[in-house]
Length: 132
Image 1 (tube, rainbow, N blue to C red):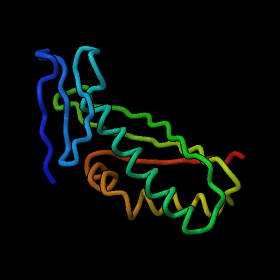
Image 2: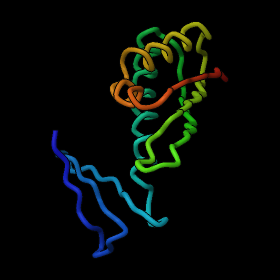
Image 3: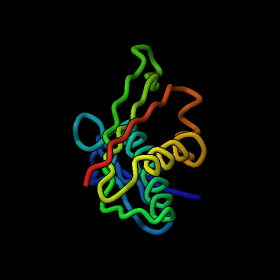
Image 4: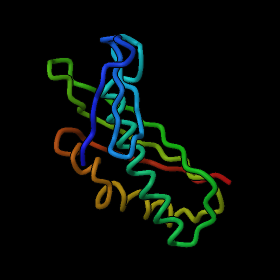
């Protein structure tokens, strides 16, 4: 795996990360773009959501969407690492509660690589709701 990070538009407050496939994300500081720590949370949400979607599809659940809200607390001291992270999944469609619970739990405790890395530094919790 390899990525590049380049200064964007000669602006030292804004950068573009590019992966080997050419996909880009914008990182920034001072409000110019999403910050690196916010991107970590997006990566956690993305990783776990992909797991949940794949598992629910495999369970033949009629899934239409998954939204995740992530809240986090950071240390006051430098380095300002995360101490607590909570993910709340809103799973939409005709999905059985026990299947949703199983998918979320499996992602958070077994499959999501980002979660497994972050749990070494922060307490990670999750919740979910199913709506049609």
